[in-house]
Image (cartoon, rainbow, N blue to C red; front, side, top):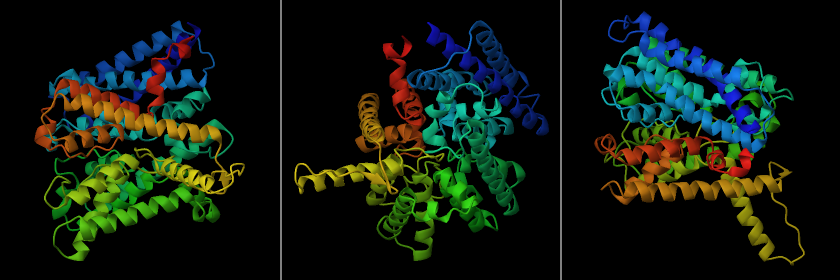
Length: 482
């Protein structure tokens, strides 16, 4: 009971902070004179619910130190709770089912980018801003943001529950100092991206929204056509290049950005994950450009391939060409599916299993082969970036990898039972949900009509993938709550 009381207290703190963030779309609504058709109550009601429940929990329950397992469970419950409240504006403004609103909000907070909305170009500005803001909040983790707002108070366990998104190592010994650096880099990249897009021809609103959803690698756009909408703009090539750059930066570990700012070149040059990340992007781009697209000029094919590879590998999901279009061959589809599964770097805003873990699994395989060819008593250590990988990290990597594949397999089997879509499309949909990717090989017309059962499984998959499976499983462990 004491553990549950501590959980409820920290959830209350998060809900109070969340209420103030929900007020931000009110400013956009007032700027664009939407308050008649879309009145303030659409945003005030969920904010009032959030702050009311939050104050009640903080008052009723006292804070206590959390154990790692309990902290992960808090994170999982918190993500579902905030998604429920964050869905209210969609539900009230667009008159859709609450399940569809919850789906959209969960997709936003987890930076997945899946959407059930059509006619996005006609949605009110405040709703489009709220969609983008949910992705920016979730980019580095909901709890890392609220711990930063509270100046690092609370428990470091909540930070560690989302540390796969924040950083593999702290930037400095102090928790608040690390959070300040992390969010400073994140906000700086977002501001720079927005200013560049504005200078390249986007109007201020489009530039702001796309900056929020590019650096967070979320992929919500203000247009149904995604980035292809801007193809008629005079500086479209520059817009495309800017988005590629900032998607890449969002998918790269923020430790790399910090080393770059501090001019610690050794930490960049000898970074094994960065080398693997660049190698995969280059190899995938060349394969898609020369083997995975139809006929056309080499420059055009490279440009199309580069954008789509970076977009999918970083889990952003923007597109200049629909991945379901005849432009891409079955080989390109298979490459895209692998990229959805792998994702970006540890300590970035991207989804997927992460490059570092793929590298560690490769070293585990190599160690096994080396031991098979050496005397039985030989010791072969697994190293990464010149350091021996602790046994705990090796175990966690293997557990997460198998859990990841297990959730995808179970989710694909269940969702396959409620749809007539081809098996490849069903698998890609679950990989996209768990990997927080967004794009899949389910056509838009087939996706909007999916069964409520599939929507529920996608919601569970998005949160599970965002928190890397284990926190979701811990909710159902009785030992965590004892």
